[in-house]
Length: 214
Image 1 (cartoon, rainbow, N blue to C red):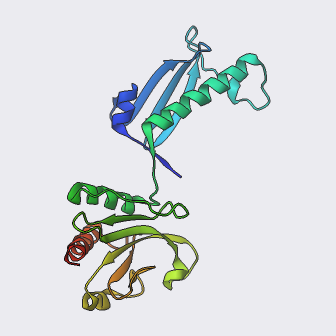
Image 2: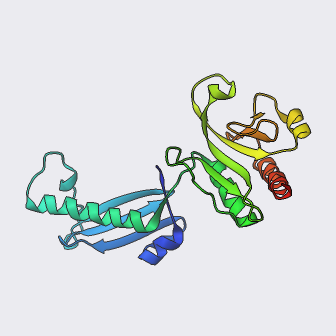
């Protein structure tokens, strides 16, 4: 599962921020200087000899052996593992729109996503604080299971909708009757960019209100 950096955790750990890049330098027990940069969700590392300023790359050479090389590899792996553990979070969402929706729901309604199924770690649900009724679900499903061509996996959003409105909205292209949900009261929409984010947030708002009425 993809990991995403958390800015406040990076800064608390000791990273310095310059525009959109976070940089950390620390000396490993072996004496080499480790420089770690995080940019755009990617983490890169570089080792240098602090006395000469020359890069150290022997640990990357396949087949290189020796006590020092072995120690460097172990220390580097431990340092990067600690940074990932303390500064990154698992990202269960498959693409940008589910990630943006999760952020929007948290900021608008104060509701955190819940991941209820161990065998489906990418599936998240949101429920109303008033009565614990679900009003949104995101997940991934193969296109052909929605009646579309191909077996590629696509991100989807399930939301509540009045039956008459649902009947008018379903088109078999972007909107479908609820996947794994009540097909009279739930609708499924593709999260592939074919529906604007503004429209998605409007649908979530309506779904949230309907959940409170039940």
